[in-house]
Length: 585
Image (cartoon, rainbow, N blue to C red; front, top):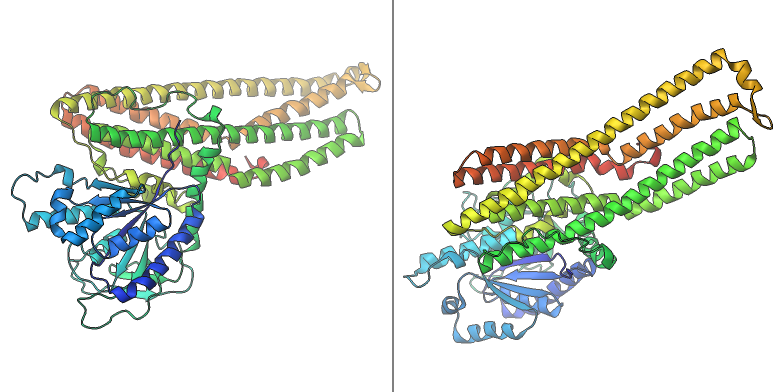
């Protein structure tokens, strides 16, 4: 059973030559801010990612360990090569971290592709540092930056990492300064991206001839609309804090699920694979674990939302029956009282269940699960590195919806690692992807499309029967009214009254069923299944007609893009269902 939760990752960048006398104040600022983030994430592991260089990297690592976070050192090169960049005392200090159970050391992805046995000069080292910086950007949700506020104009330097993280340009944009404007009012999240923030701790450096920073208050930076233009906020934006809570709720919801709802069937995507190398296996297995967790949460929330929608349908049907009985059969006050009680209970339950956000939980978890499904198979096929998940989020409009923005945080820490296979494994991986993703998904969506089409066809038959029955009943009332009135069933209750009651009851039940279908977004679901079926079936047909691995990979990658866009659009079309009253459909 899965126990590991989705991590919140904090990257670190900063200068090596900090002033010793400033360290206590800086450390205290960091402790207070990181502790406030931890308060929003009581059920979530917070992991700090750092290169463990002298100065800023180790200072933040010390604070993180003191706060109870885990620290992952992303080494730009193997430790036996990396140690040449430290003096004996500094390297001994680095090795001391390995004794802490919350400290982990891994090599950067780029480092694992370099042959360090050959001649390795300073330019190659610089490239390793630059690539490590990019990995830090790719994997971090939040960035802690100990920076003097100056643009050093160096690739991989503190200011360069800061700009690239915020998508605000690079060191070599031809713009010498980085302008920081203080702002007090709340920012519009539709204009400024509040999902990417930097915690900026102003510092002075030993190499500076004079002190540049006099105010050591820790600030929050967000990118403005122009490159090299940043906005400084006194606190973390409310939207960002809400997203922290939503991430934590995602983790806690899995832990609180009954064991019977966890791993209810074998839904691992890579369980049958035994031909991957160890690093690739670990990478795909980490994504597979995240997929299984999201899939279980999605199914659990779906069951809960289905129960809620059915309950509202039953309550609406009961209210209609009570009113019809009162109006057409027995004018007893008890039926009006029951009608009113159900109405009040319905409003109460709607407000209560809407606050639980089961349907939104189902949609967000399904987005996460299906995104991981796509990423796993694209990783196996060796084409995932180009998948623009964040761009698809923006294009689809998913990020506009409250409760959706944090989803990319779940995906980001595992988005960074490309997979490369040997030639023999490459064909196995592509074939596995074709059969176990494209083929299986094509069959799944075909079945779902057919099932919903049959349900729709049966519903249309029922509608036709009811309309015909209502028409015949109306004819009977016109031509045989006297006979129907005289046919007494019990007391004063005539056949005519029964016929009128049924004429009101049958359309009522049909209307309730239509409302339920609308609430469940069956039409949108059928539309999504049909589109996905077409995408996967077309891709499967194309891919079977070519023997070129390169061409097959191109088809797989394009399918991944299209499939993700369909998933995001499907969620948008269904999102509003939970936030409408039960009668709105």
